[in-house]
Length: 319
Image (tube, rainbow, N blue to C red; front, side, top):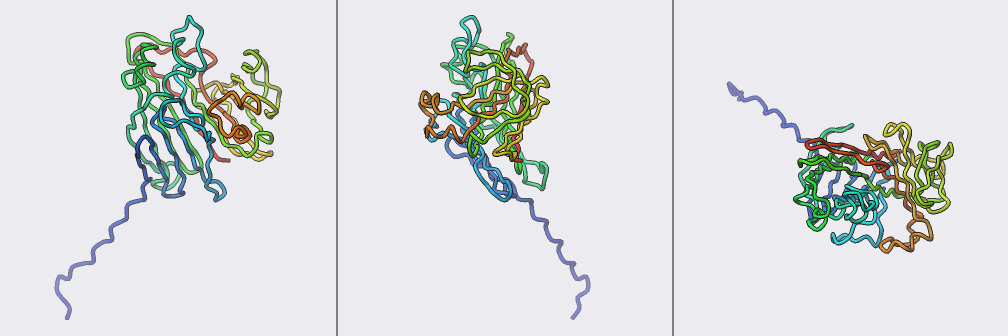
């Protein structure tokens, strides 16, 4: 029997798009994209990116090199991944404000705060991008180190994972009433198949400081950089951050590195002899499978006046 005023069928509820899974367990934050299974893992000590598993040609694999001997309990800087260098690169002369700080400063050995995550569609469907935010200030930094460099600062570090890429950006703000000078660098350890067949393009005919030869100033020959021994160079590309870099293996492009407001590039591999002086580098043969391409601002000091901010970033792309 037909009913009068028969109710209409309920409209189907549209399912919510899949969200990236973000977990905070102990002192590690992990994010996984639901669309591809790609992931990033960040240690709160130093806000150090420990792992980036990226997808290329249907292959999900680790893209960052991490030493088997890396210390992950916060007592030492992490050997590998992407440590954050601030406010000094290397060590300073005695007459510079950062002179009392250990090599590479205080950010990489301080415990950062996890500020949360955000998601967007990125370059693909909903849930295909996730950003993790981390913060550090003079008040929350390692007190033994911040006492050696008495300036008021805040750092905001953002780690954004998208299919086939990883972006890390940093905002440095002078929160005090005194100007300060600083260096900043993203100490990225890329994983490579074999350093002897790895080349870098984009830095040809560029001036650099050769740390292996006592900071001697040289000019890179035209063409690609190949590796046959210890390499520790600070490149100063004439086009600054506009100059893109490509890392290739046996002639095939593997990584693209683009920079935003980070004009310098450090290229480092310790090779077979120097590696034995690096205690937490393991296995010692691991130098064959890593190459540091480190965007930064380290060839000269940046100055921040009170209430001013500096922002820089790198984008790592699978090619």
